Structures are given as C-alpha cells and as structure tokens.
Image: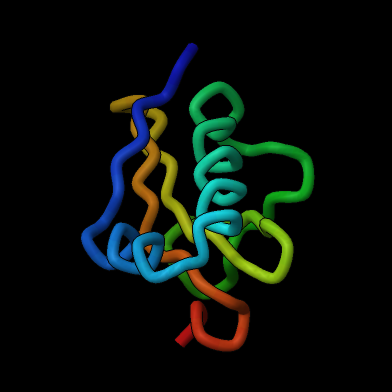
Length: 85
C-alpha cells in the first residue's frame, strides 16, 4: 500500500534552503516512506503525539503517519541542533 506524502509549509521552506545534493538525498528518503512509513532506523519522538523521525546524514526528517487516511505529513526538515526546537 502506497502512502500519500504531504508537506507542511515549513518543511517545504526548509528544503528550498538546502544545498541541492543534500535536498536530493532527503527527498529520496522521504519518497521511500511512501512504501514503508516506518523503515528500519526510524524512531518515534518522545513527548509528542506519535511523530516519527528518520536520519539522512546530519539531517532529521520529522513526520507524522496517519494510517487511517494513508497519509504521511512531513512536519520539519533540518539539522539536529535546530529541528527539535
């Protein structure tokens, strides 16, 4: 089952600011979430409402999986020191 991937406005803005090579790696990792929304190495964030995170090099992708609607909402993209703020 393929999940539909949607982006929060802040996540789109963050991708536009990144170097083209890094942005490409991150977008490939996000596209892979469509077929496997909980890949090996993903972690559920503590203290939240079920958000997940994957690592892509030094960057983190924070996303929420809605199994009922088969949708993944990408909430934030950034380096570790800034994405959790």
